[in-house]
Image (cartoon, rainbow, N blue to C red):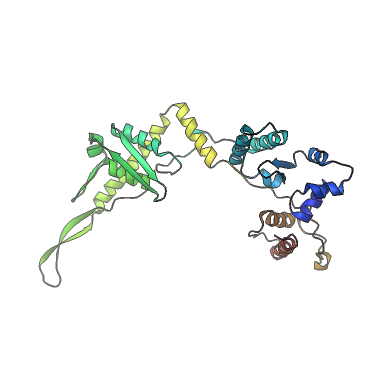
Length: 310
């Protein structure tokens, strides 16, 4: 552990050659064995990484990459240990019943919306999502009573049917519906026709859109458990997969920094952790103040990063 601290303090990472030079009676394999659970092997980089950094971020994605690596390479105990550590760090999955599904969320596959709309309108409905334009396309070859009456709003110029309002529901927008009105021209005194927003019809369209959203939540609750589990698993893999890194900067010695000259016996642990976070990430923003601590953290971080060539 002392050799690891020395390596982190001098180089900012796990330098096995340097650590071996500090421990002439130990082979690198023995050092690695003694530090089991503290450092983890990265096969793609053929190096070891401290647990603070390794077991953080998207741990599901990291575990998937290691699983793929093991499928195409020979068995490796170090990789197995790394994979096991990532699996154990995966956050507890959120169950379907604890999730709040909003109609139009981009992470939900368009096929799910198509299946719902087909059930709601009792005809085949296709839904496609263009990620580059962030826009949905909703189409149906047939006009059922549900599309043209139950979930439709008639404006003066056109009818906004269920297909059109479903697209608005997915986009979280409301159609801008207009109507005509006769007013007196102030210049000529004659009647003239103008277009204006039809607030009553817009409000009715909005209520239909909300009704579609409510039907989606009800429809989801009626789906088989297998469907619900797949959707919940997709959510967990996309969003409930991140682990915040725990930065432990206690190993830092700050050589050459005159801490007694600052009138303090040592830095706070939180300050050491903040400096180590900045060094590990190669920079960043720190806003944690303890008295004059924020300035001191930034000075220490700048000093250390310059010393390490970061």
